Length: 268
Image 1 (cartoon, rainbow, N blue to C red):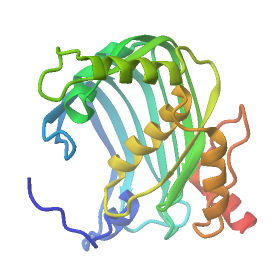
Image 2 (cartoon, rainbow, N blue to C red):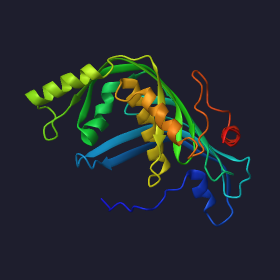
Image 3 (cartoon, rainbow, N blue to C red):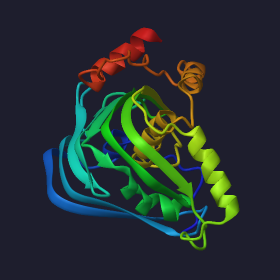
């Protein structure tokens, strides 16, 4: 519960590594079978949410602070999140560019969505009462200011519920009406491709950036946000932030952030 210090920009990973004064070169950092537990106290509910990452396997390569313009920091990982497996995560960020261009990609095995109530209940007073996904694949490109991409989140039988903040088991008339309206608005099932777009909060580190960008794609997938709205937001700021072109439908991220940086310089 330390007071948040405003006005301090959190550096992107490559910029943070470059700020280390002594010369450093680590070829590979390998993590196997690790468990990470993230705990956060919600400002909305004043409750602690617990998000476990289990069986984390990760390889981080090319950790250096005397990098050339061709050097790339790479992360490849897999883990189990709330009982659901993230099969592969790929993150690559270019060293030799002050904008920190990057690519991000991950996909997950079929998931039981009710397991996410463990996190959403204390953090947002929302429970996932039913639902199962058979596809979650997303990729995006961006820099330290914003990210744009696509997500395929295919699911069936989604049902959510706003919960009583003091007694989650209590179901009064008001909550019943709200939940009925909410589930009439949300897509019960989905097989459409969604746009991912997020303008980064520069006061938060890259992990917050990853989560919020993923969340933007989930919101369009379930029908809370609209693809057109995100696309319009992207068009308004793409020149200001020197963003790359939005990936074409059905395409994959560039092979490396270096090619992404070249695309950015060519467009703007």
